[in-house]
Image 1: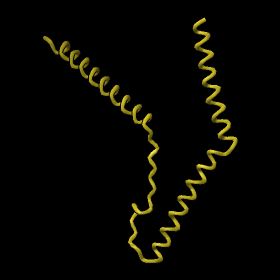
Image 2: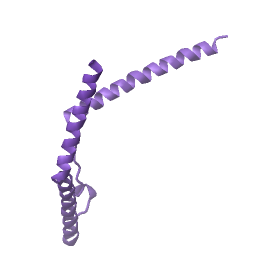
Image 3: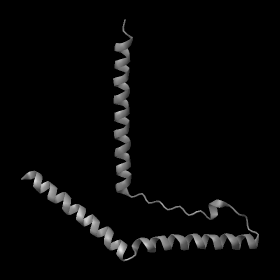
Image 4: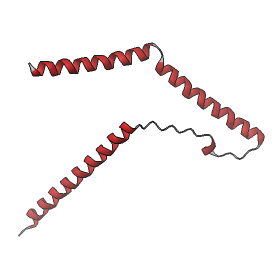
Length: 106
């Protein structure tokens, strides 16, 4: 009974995720974002060409657009992942040191 309820909850969450992606794709959200990125790139190209015509100093940093997509939630996930990685690395190193001691005993 409990397993059936868990399965139904997982199925419901997957359905919601599917519907969200389906609707956003249907109404062009992803295409809009791609178009916006292309327009931004086109603006940078035009600015670059204008600066060349005007003889201004050209530096890649003036035309590069960096967008930080990291949120507080993704930063927290990254911190947790790094912590778990450190703990596991220390544990594995400790295990291998102990195995090395056992193997090297005469």
